[in-house]
Length: 458
Image (cartoon, one colour):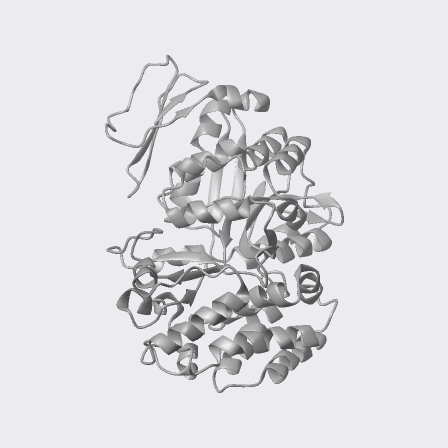
């Protein structure tokens, strides 16, 4: 990869397993730095002139993203460091969420942090109002130009923009086998009722095969995939406004609209005629590992599996993920074709310093230049909600589809609900009670009332 450098030294940044070499040359001559055959792209330092000369400065970054993914993060900073002269000091920690507040309390904040949930961002702003720095003008301009209104709102607290999206994901997907659909004459459903009708057709056509396969076992996080099911269906049956009220506890967790949504989910996940393809009965969902529960699709023991775009990492390497491949995914439809809610997640960049180099790096991370640099060093499984991203850099068809959905204003995006709730609820009572809902088969009202009691008791 050739980078026109502002400075005169050549840099080679290798990312293990990616076959990528970034090479910078001041004189404009092609120089692969011995990395012939590696991925190549041009970076024009004219895009970085807005940041000025930042030589001799350092920006510290603190995040939960650790190796090997951290290698890709560091590689994506090379254009910025080479064109501005700034250095980036990166620290990834598995204790990030616990330690960041400790560091703020001690007066030792990082310059930049990657916040994994909007709820965590809000708590930081509320608890440390003098530590979190509002986004600068360049960041605000990028946010308004390159992100949908929904994404900007998730980085905003009390009317002030503090954070911009980093990576993103889409959870409103149903995985399937294109070959099985073609063989059986099945078409992709465009409404929720169409999805249920298709499920019934599968039951009639294949009485020995359960249409859906599912698993919510995930170690200490067992139950989280079931929360995604409920969140997706709340968006479809109750709508985005009710979803927002539910997530922020403006209405009770067991509001009748939420009970109705969980019962709608139960129409699939608690239906012995529909689940659990190749894995057992309804109760088996609670013990089936999430990362393996879709295997029935290529094995031919189920037809449908609801999971996010990042589930692609769990398919066997021999399988082709494509519309005409072994496995692929379609958008989980709304109540009508015009109803297009979209559930997803991601991380957000926020700053704890207004120094010139920190504000410049935050602006870079909110720009298409960074999104494209990150896409170039990532094989698959990473996307951005930045509409300036060059879609051609995304190597996976499901990543391309996810990007299209995230940047399409016709889809109403909402961030994962459990990630916005207090940790004791979203990553505690919600997970536990949804598991109990599956096995031993607790009813919807009891399940949601138990979570409401836990929240009210905080």
